[in-house]
Length: 216
Image 1 (tube, rainbow, N blue to C red):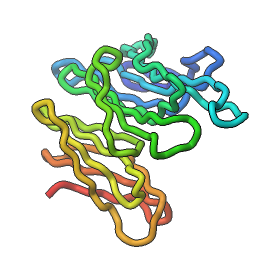
Image 2: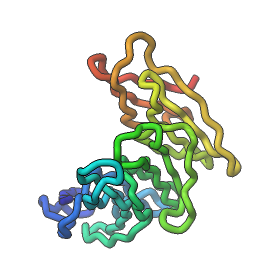
Image 3: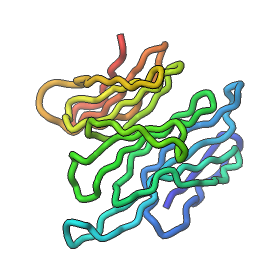
Image 4: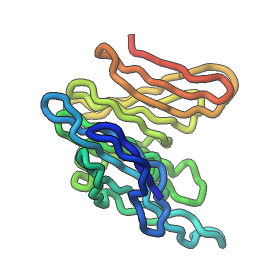
């Protein structure tokens, strides 16, 4: 189940916000603002899953929908389905909002453990416009908006690198960025942000710490 607590627009103590007997996991939040930059509420995306029989072995595996919800400062949520799972593990959603547009990214894969099926998806009209699906396998997407450019990073199957992709004038381009050389270590993208007009990525590397990689 998912729970919330907040301070913006009036403090609210911890309370439960999902109630169906499903698997509600991996929530992500983004503030909504008015044209003056004042917070007006929040967006919430998460994985809403059920256990279903595996197609390859005698076990249960997780099939997830991606849901998107909106709340004002009252903290009362209204949600809708944006991506129906069809024997898919859909997880690690990430949200961003800019100029009234909602951007949503997540990764999808078959639930039987084949990493080669893992793909990152992104849309700027969740539940309306079909998402763009990237060909480079990976997961853990993080979004940032830079002027009119949509920026996205994710962890490819190469654990020492990240992929950074940009969409300008409707076309996506991407590059592989080596974070650290040396022995293979577990790595996970934490945050993609725009600082002084340039992208900065924060990446957690097991046993080493958090690395910041910035544009020059």
